[in-house]
Image (cartoon, rainbow, N blue to C red; front, side, top):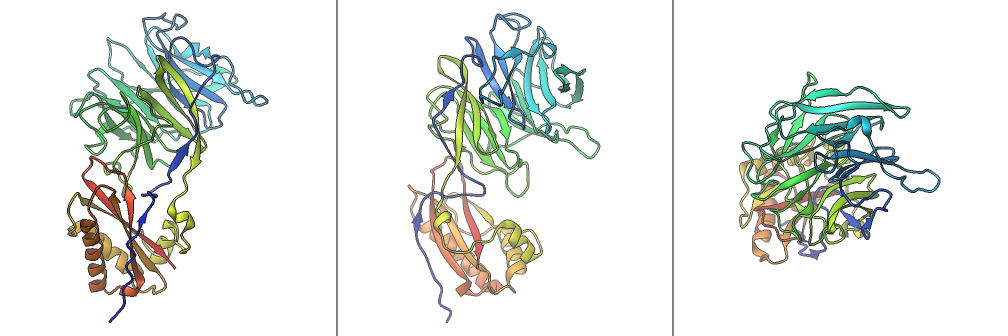
Length: 411
């Protein structure tokens, strides 16, 4: 009889599918950037030299204090590493609302949006800047922009993905997040709702995508948080824009009892956001650090996704999602496990660590049953029991119904 090693360990919260971050102390940007007006939506160019943001209720806006918001900008002094006094980006602004929503990969293209109370926007504007001079703006049409009241968005630097916040016809709450991508003809698709994992009956707003387009940051009043609106993140799964991990709160170093929004992160070292924790909306900066996980001290030689793909000759999906309280495998999960078996059954040196993520306030029995069901499936499929170990890791309690089991491969 084959001896099977069970490791029932309660480990620290660890990586689900992407890197975890810790944050330093949030610092309000100096008065040469912030003002006595509301300053929001900080967007940094990829070279880190230009900070664009939106200023509202300001006497120095092109249309005055009450007619609209303007795009402002500040430049980084390379010698002092300080931001210059913010200036109005005059050629981009008029009596309507002008909002910066993204910067091109080379830093010379700005994506921005104009809105007014009398006309719905037809899309996003793109404008180039060379030698301090702005070119003529170009419209990028987006079909199906039908906001009833609220509208915001983020355009990725490569101009291939757009995340939109609006209260559209099929919104669940006051403001939902939608996805639009550029198709093979170079046209933007009609925005599609991101679904109930992300969107709630509250508001979801101020979206931002990580550089690899895997992680979505946004502000929500509908997920459990500390204030009027907290910054959350979730990761997209299965290379899909429709399946997302459960949103996770960024924590008290970023979030407060007030509204915290417009979070954006750069180079995995620094992030910017806006908050009204000091009455008006101000811009803040926070340092970002890699969070150490239990895997950092695990002496097993875990293989990367790329290494496993090369060994198996195919892309494997080592994540299984269960409804809360269930342990039986469904057809989709079995298909994933069959694919893993087909790719790795002949590689006897590859071993499996099956990890069930368990909230601290839930009983262990359901998570043990999930692991045993996965073990039984692999054994029946021909994977030797001595190639498999188990562990559980503590995850945060969540109002979402999906719970995860991850399979990690090692030698």
